[in-house]
Length: 142
Image (cartoon, rainbow, N blue to C red; front, side):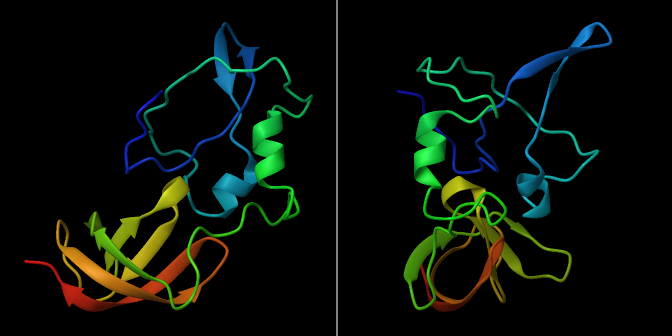
């Protein structure tokens, strides 16, 4: 079993193609549109072989397709949080406007005002959008 770090921003299935003597990995447009990655930024990439031979022509394996069957490809997968949900999280970093930022499942971003990097807080999810959620601090861990 592969250990997946909490700071994982995106998990995709893609085919490598040969381009100008090198290999190129295609990132699905919805990952970029959901602000999970920024074009031109540098990222660490792990390359793992697929576990099944059932890979569709579009580069997504059947497990990935089944997981998103309830939502259309244009919408992407459902957010992993819901409004009113309470979670304990560790703030990863500070955003451009000074808010705390943490990532939950699949690298989904949750913005937490009045929270500091490395602080562990219990939050309530207040607003959920397709690519980000906003939460308020209920309790600070000591």
